[in-house]
Length: 170
Image (cartoon, rainbow, N blue to C red; front, top):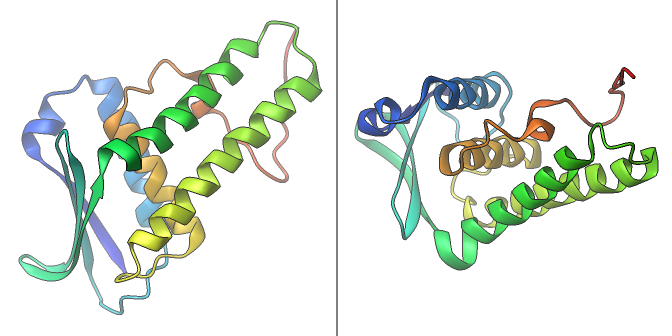
């Protein structure tokens, strides 16, 4: 069971409160609803990153490594994140523009498709810990908010998916 997601203290302190709030939300969603194949009473995820890679360290206790995965930025994470964010920005620009429900729906589907594709890529990279597809989606969301300032992209902050009703006021 995932009990903690740890971010380097210097990174945490070095961003504005609005970004830390997004980080908290993504961390909480991942901790509250996840499923990994690793059987341990406590699983800790340490996330660190630089220009070349993002490192995900899964531990059952301090220093008790289960798996460490380096996800390359260029040719890996960065294109997935940029593609996803580009779709989100386009979706945000349509809100309030008088765009048709069909136009908005197509972009919303493209956003979900990009999220799903990134989750499939993460699944392939994380075989050692075996997350479910939904867990990989939540992990991708965490990586997006950690690596990009998403505080100004409205479409990232509204619910979507089956059964979600969105009310638009005129």
